[in-house]
Length: 471
View 1: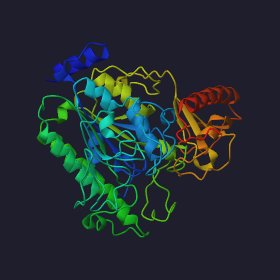
View 2: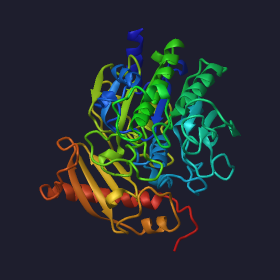
View 3: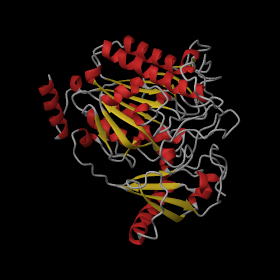
View 4: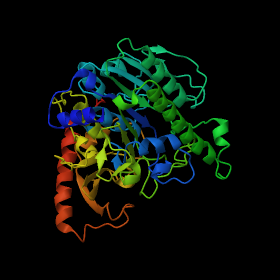
């Protein structure tokens, strides 16, 4: 069996076509506001995450995995399209009723895989439109999902007994249980009910945890008696409950003999929430680990996240990879795994990372890069090329009040702006970005800042305006 799998791997890597029954199922698990330092397998000494630790031991753990953005909606847009989210006009988180949404002409992983015979399902947080479950904007079903069970943004009123889920356009009403477990229940129910279960599936499983407003099972809260700060045990238990949900889903794959045939990728949408950033955030005790910054920061604490890949026989077990990768890389990678065409109608920013699974080097056409106009400290743009990272500021207002949803007047000002100041860091030697090196490396900062400025202008020019305000 292993020799067959290895032969198939060689066939895929050399460009051969793959029969439909040989293509893997694809399961992408995305959690919300999980800090880089929140899992035991990433160094946390307190929170119990045995299921994710086991997942990491069964596959490849990426030490330098990056989200597409330091906050939620843009991160999801980048993952689903393989494009920097500013290109799609997802500039910030999408408040209910906001005009931002992922437009129909944006190609998602789900829409690509559906065209090549995959069954597709989205369960959990959507957050790619402001007018959720309304005809004026696209919904999950418009982006390639056969089945969807979702919320616009957070589980409400909390993770416990949420009332705001919608299933395929119909309100579900009040439910009993915790959001992550309800999401896994729906995922397993959909998998059980597929008529043609010999067809491969793509599932995008998006937990609300550990985003505020946090609530957790009492028995898990009780496992952290040494937590002293208000809300601390509640947060730890929230991560542990999410880990428990992952474990249930992995056990389902085992029980149904799907593990060997399923590529799993686990990650987070951004870094941990800043404690007390707003009134309801008193339970946010996530950790960026050794990284600088948190959610809303363009420093690594805001964008560097857990990344775990598992596909037995194809992704080596008990392996660690320090090559920088990003969620924008999932689109071209999954297309390769599924023998599906990579979208060509719009510019992609991701790279196929499949060579890393066999120990080969990765060649990028362009470096990984990020943009968020509300970045704290007026740091709005970053680019990482190998070990080096440049961080840029713009020539607009110094502070935008980071964390707000898009408002009138922002995009025209972005389109008129340019990057003006840059910082340079060597991430390999300086994980917490504490030593600014531009004075010591004038040639490198000149080259990287020029490329960053070009990318900035390119993506700003591509993004839509949304509001009727071109003044």
